[in-house]
Amino acid sequence: MEPKLHRRVQRYGWDLAVEAYDRYWVPVLRVCSERCLELAAPAFGERVLDVATGTGVAAFLAAERVGPQGTIVATDLSQKMVEAVQEAATARGVANMRCERADAEELPFPDASFDAVICSLGLMYPADPQHAIDEMYRVLRPGGRAAVCVWGRRDRCGWNHVFPIIDARVNSDVCPMFFLLGAEGALQYAFERAGFSDLRDERVSQTLDWRDGEEACGAIFPGGPVALAYSRMDEAARADVHREFIDGIAQFQQPDGTYRVGGEFVYMVGTKA
Image (cartoon, rainbow, N blue to C red):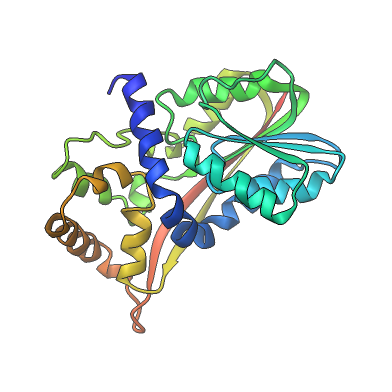
C-alpha cells in the first residue's frame, strides 16, 4: 500500500476505534504503558513526548511523574484520539499536558526538544517504522531516552489470525508488517540503525484476558487495527468473522467461559549519545 494511503487508512481506522479501544484494550494493555514509563524513567521537571498516545494511558502516567514543572506532549495520527485525550486532560485538571495530531514519521518538533520519548504499541502502524524511530532519536536531547513496546512474534500472539480473516472479506491489506519488529533482534537493529546506544530489550509473555467472546470481538474488531475494514461489513459478515475468530481462540477458553489468549510483547529502551 502506498505510504500516503496507508497513513490515511490508519487515521480513519483509529478515528473509529476510540470508544471500543478505551473500553476493551486499555484495561488489558495498561501494563505496557507502565513498563515503557519505567524504562524511560522520566524525572521531575522533564519534557516527555508520547508517540501514538491512543487514549493517553502513558501520557497521564508520565504527567504524574514529571510534576507541574514538567511537560507532556501527547501525539497521535488520529484526530479523534487526540480530542479524547485532551477532553480527559481537561476533565482531570491535568495542566502539564498538551495534545497534538502528528504523524510518527514526521514529528513536528525541533531537534533535541525532549528528555524522553515513549511509544507503547504504536510502532506497528507507521508506513515506515524505521523512519518513526529515527524521528524519536532526532527530537531527543543528547542523553535522552526512548522506550517503546511492540507486539512480539506472530506465532506467540494467539489472536493473530484476525488479519487473514479480515483480508479474506475486505481488500484492505491491513497491517501486513504488523509483527515485523517483534521478530528476534528486529527492534534492536532498528534502534541501533537510528543511532541509539545503551540498548536494553525485554521479551515478555503475557495473556490477554477477556470475560467472554463478546468482549474479545469488541477488542479485536471495532477497537483494533482492523476497525476501518470492519466498519465496511454488513451485520451478516460481522457475525461470520466473529464466529471464525472465536473458533480460532477456542484453545484459550477457560472452564468458566473466559479467555486467556497468549500474547508476547517486546520492550526496548535506548539513549541518544
